[in-house]
Length: 134
Image (cartoon, rainbow, N blue to C red; front, side, top):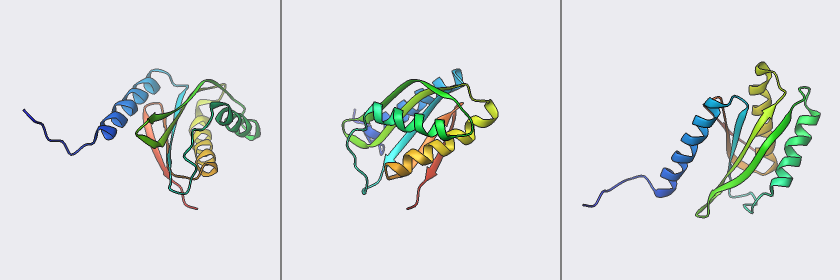
């Protein structure tokens, strides 16, 4: 039996990854995932984890709310789709009332730096999408 589906394997893979991230962020309130979707104008080469860590640390040092990042990992979704990049980490020592605004601004900062068309973040099981304009 042949099953016809309008959804590509990349879309299914993305949905599975995002569902797992949402589940993890519901279980751990310090867990944050920033998803960058690169535009045609951006450099789509792999972003080194060290570079992203420095960008996040620099942003947090200049922010009025001081916090620190733990368990940082960066990865592309898969080899077939280099346009999507995941940055996952735990954000510690930040008041709950300040986390959403801090993560929103951090996401915009990183998205603009790497010329992303879209970026989004997942925190406490909620996905927030941001369209960037240049």
